[in-house]
Image (cartoon, rainbow, N blue to C red; front, top):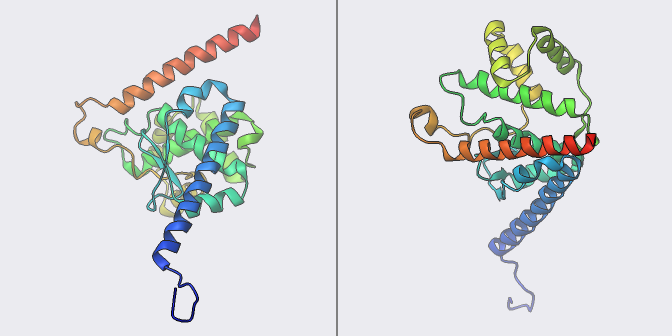
Length: 228
């Protein structure tokens, strides 16, 4: 209290309180997204439980290392204002990167092309789900690129998209246009040690391989029960 009898505001304490409040809000936002994804895709149960939420100022707006889901509080809250579908989608996007092993299998591929290829492949899968919880209207650019991938034939995977990018070798303007269209999460925490030491064990990759195997079993069981 000052000499005049009024309380002085401690700016450090005030900033800490606001940061704690933002953390609580973001935890609620991501928990809500996890619940919505679970209600729509129950076979993702193990995968959804595998990524606790951790705030980090350097992430834009979320990203993962296969161990936790990082988020930037202010950016996540801004995304939430645009609609719950946006948050659900970015959560699922990062989750699918883990399930498909994108974090650990770049090998000698060009990093920029690989990051874009992974984003396009994941967005292709999400757009194909036709779920209201993650629905975002497709732009003309997106529709055209999907049509191009379908015409190339085969399953749309990150490896396939990467090959298409290498064949096209897009000019800078075209490449940046594709990045703006398909980039959703932050890849800065993707595993780099596996690139330097490819023969070393990758425990996180094995963990997600196991989750994917369990998920496949659950999908097959669910399909059989539905058919019966």
